[in-house]
Image 1 (cartoon, helix red, strand yellow):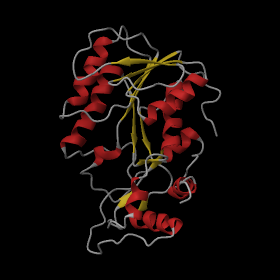
Image 2 (cartoon, rainbow, N blue to C red; image 1 turned 90 degrees about the vertical axis):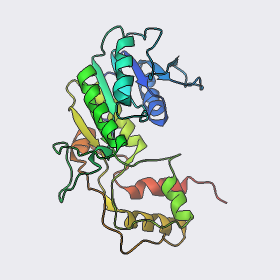
Image 3 (cartoon, helix red, strand yellow; image 1 turned 180 degrees about the vertical axis):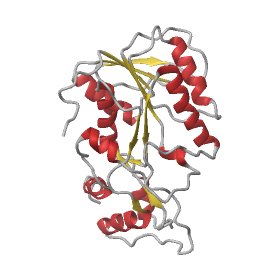
Image 4 (spheres, rainbow, N blue to C red; image 1 turned 45 degrees about the vertical axis):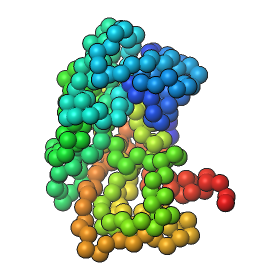
Length: 276
């Protein structure tokens, strides 16, 4: 289902950070007539219809950015606890005006030290512990303070080109079979970001997870079966770490997921691999 099909895209969109998510989102926006700018630190080739802007947000920008109606921030975690706040402040100072809509991509990693016996929802308060998770959470707050941003927290992004777990199974590396895991296919995450740009009144916060949180042992066992190899070993004494995240809000927004569980996603990735 294409939940954004009848909603017009922003007229001009700035993608801050241009990795796989940015490229996927740019493709959808350009196809619907949006003018797209990509702010990144490199001069790599860009898809047709995307205008590149080379800039390093760790320092003040020397040239003003174009006026845009919408913005999506997918920056990798900058160094230091206040790295996001510094980058976002430099971003704001270089814009001629604030966009009507900003979406900030964070992570469920902000719940790093959370202890819970129920599925985590958007109403639960994060408990970050490490510098990385504290930096992410501070980035969320800075994005809200500076841009009134919509915050998206994905968990375990996977898809073509993100085959870490497939490699781990092939290499028979031990994993904690009891660790609770959540994930989202890249395609569904891009769909969510696209919709949040177009919606007249989006929710302030969305957890981007699919409909099948599962112990890691279940996931690697399925992958191993599809690959025709033995499942990687687990440590029976390892604790059942991790959390279960509730994806009900995301599902209500999108209507359905292209990859509702890890089964559909990993099966497709394995089927697409070249035959030895």
